[in-house]
Amino acid sequence: MRDLGAKNGHQHVVIIGAGPAGLTAAYELLKHDIATTVLEKDPKYVGGLARTVEHKGYRFDIGGHRFFSKNQEVEDLWTEILGSEMLTRKRLSRIYYRGRYFAYPIKAANALWNLGPIEAVRCMASYAYARVRPIRNPRSLEDWVRNQFGWRLFSIFFKTYTEKVWGISTKELSADWAAQRIKSLDLWLVLKSALMPRRRPTNRSDVVTTLIDRFRYPRFGPGQMWERVAEIRRKKGRPVLHGRTVDRIEHDGGRVRSVVTRTASGEIEEHQGSDFISSMPIRELVSRLDPAPPESVRRAAESLSYRDFISVAVMIDRADVFPDNWIYIHDPTVKVGRIQNFKNWSPDMVPDQSKTCLGLEYFCFEGDGLWTATDDALVERARNELAQLGICKPEEVFDGVVVRQAKAYPVYDDVYQAKVDVIRDYIREHLTNLHLAGRNGMHKYNNQDHSMMTALLVARNIATAGSVDPWKVNADAVYHEEVRVGEKDLSARQVPERLAGSAL
Ligand SMILES: Cc1cc2nc3c(=O)[nH]c(=O)nc-3n(C[C@H](O)[C@H](O)[C@H](O)COP(=O)(O)OP(=O)(O)OC[C@H]3O[C@@H](n4cnc5c(N)ncnc54)[C@H](O)[C@@H]3O)c2cc1C
Image (cartoon, rainbow, N blue to C red; front, side, top):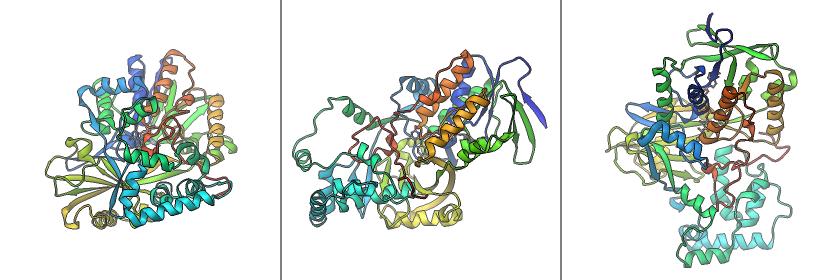
């Protein structure tokens, strides 16, 4: 076993994970002249969920990553790291449903127009019925949205996509989530918006909405940001240690002493430090503690769940396939949930401008039928679904590659918060030099900016013996990716919660 890391008396921080959180902490600690070791299980990539995968010169994200933050410090940090390599891109994203493209965010007049006169009349009738005969005390998302919009609009614009993303029936998702975030349908406003031209943005919410029309994006994808940080470290003689999976976190006397990693070839290393930052999923972190924590903590960690994700990148022999950055696929006849067109994020994502690279996103659970399908079967599915949606012909797809991403989304069920609190309190009290940061690292539905902010605070606490609470970051964060209909409340968390008592 090799012993790497801190010598007695020196401050040396061991960081688990080279995603946005881990590398932001490392970058900040570099500014404070504090030595760090970054351990990453991936043999090749940095960036974690925000990495950019490369296949024969085609680059693609694990889900398209917009760089957008209300936090100026994070925006400035992105500029500091990548400078002019940060592009500002215009956003176009629409919803595909039964052969039609609907504006997103949804505009009721546009939706009714697109549905055609017969379906529009049906939707209005179903809306009228829901208003006259509302479900009393709606508990589920399904009941609440049906009350506001009528069953038909609900089933077109809410049901299929929400169920694809979360893998849970809308009957089992809590109504509170929808009630806080979705505007009700006001027929007078629908008519007014159809007849009157758009006014200029005047209030804060409009300004934020306008900002979402544009976003920043690195020329070579989000991974470029983290590749640059890794490069800065490498030049300082501190390369990210790839292929190191954390096996054991050894502690005694209320402090973590070392992290033991294992490489693919079975080589074991021990990394000692004065402080430890973890951005690995909490569930795994707790299971690696040695000695093991009390049963209540282990059980809390085991109860945390995740939604997993598959991205199938396909290369198409055509220059222009569709103009959007991405399209939401509400159509229930296919399994794909979203399709990214990476060339529209940045032209440099493809090596040849006469070709296109699309990323078909499938939401799944680790071990289910999609997850365990072979790569060939998934590429074939992607090819067939693209043809079925009329996006391209099967023979235009000349290559495809599959990326499986476990734990892409921390699930917010009705018990997760209490469980996370148990783990957080245990670590605070019993492992005082272990600091949690990031998305799965804190089981928080963070975008990059908030993952980075938690890491910045943790790093500064270590460097300056500060005590700012990173758990306060993101208490009322915005997750633009999931802002759906109407975008009423842009300052609220956009994650649905399960109804108490319903099983996952
Ligand atoms: C589909 C999708 C779309 C998204 N879109 C956006 C977007 O548009 N804009 C945006 O800002 N954010 C977006 N996000 C969120 C963003 O990806 C995350 O907030 C960010 O990557 C979290 O950073 P992190 O460092 O906390 O975690 P991660 O990115 O998960 O990094 C953790 C790192 O730890 C490593 N690790 C895990 N376990 C171990 C172990 N046992 N040993 C060693 N290393 C380990 C992992 O390999 C990984 O590299 C999106 C996420 C998804 C899934």
